[in-house]
Length: 385
Length: 163
Ligand code: SF4
Image (cartoon, rainbow over all chains, first blue to last red; front, side, top):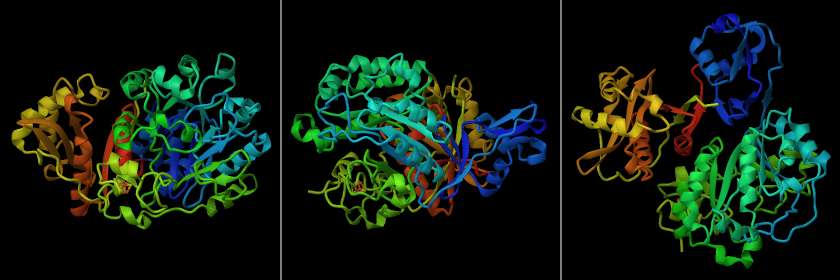
């Protein structure tokens, strides 16, 4: 089919997001494409009412967009309203929405510690998500606790489905079954899988491995992307090769490997903690996780915000300092967030790995502008005392 | 459904500090042609990217590269890594539409996960910046998630700015 003689329209899962610069975002592939102003002007006109030849003569660009499934071509007009949203600078791209703190498990490493009964009311969860979408958000991470314990989860997911956001659910997988999977209107589920059976069950303090693996297969069978998050701990170090074959078999979109941060429950279960030197090589098993690349020149958290079940916004779930009430004004919460330029990381200035490491995790660093000792070891840099 | 997408990526070069040179890292020369041919075959055969090169005719691919058919071959900004006498990794650049392009990046399977490609790319990016280039481009198959992860960590972004 010659695209010049067809009606061009933006694909259903694609939106124009004008953040620090214009982007095209594909929700289903979670890809963020930088475009220029001319491309944006052209794509804004791809509303299914005009023939390709009336819009452009740039065959290379159009053909690339068609092969990437960013544009669709049809023989007859099929009008749409081209989704375009203008964000802030810096842009808020990723929101971690903690619907509740309740969980059905008591994992040894849980950073939440004592669980409370707080829940974000459905109306508030929707309100926050709508604000996030209006600010140009990309990925909404729906988490808790265990989000499947949130009674109105299906209603919440169905309500926010039309917003041009990628919906990612974080779950331990134990409550996902043939019935509940049908209610999970999401693009991706990230499962916590912390070892191959023994290591996983030990950390979870329950025999949940099989349930989680079954849930992963169920999600795949229902056309939902799957990603995996794994903690390195003292009882799973011999299980990473087996985990790797599984992760490859299920074609996980992302395998995040992390080390434990001694907070919450882990304070009472320190036998799970692994020395940094032992844990660092395991990071190489993982992939993905870079989201779409953070802005050059800033430390972690440049585009991320978390909202707790009481509606307060925080920098990330390790930090408790409230940036304001997200239900009332998510934008103001984001404007209240402080971003750390790499130039301010005094101890990292001479480090040859700074451009890649970006100072690692600010929570793990011993001082607000100090080094992250774990990343120093991972990059082979002399760690601070 | 198979994911056949080919992602165009671009990195804004900056004054990145050079990594230490890997032992055996050097600029490729014409005499490397046959070794590069062998490397292309073993690096791509049965890999996720096998369909990205003419795997039955790797010699033709490498000759075309040296002959400038994929854009002027930027040999001085390319790198090979030798272990003993054997080339085990190569990152080969051309000049395409005015910008440097990573035409081939390949590592012998037994030498993967040693950071050769990463370190070569960092050194190449530093050389390109010193030579006055602004961007480095590459095209990667979307299904090669590990490669995409590496490139993102080095500052590459999906990019279709050639409108
Ligand atoms: S490796 Fe250590 S010193 Fe270097 S940037 Fe990362 S945290 Fe800072």
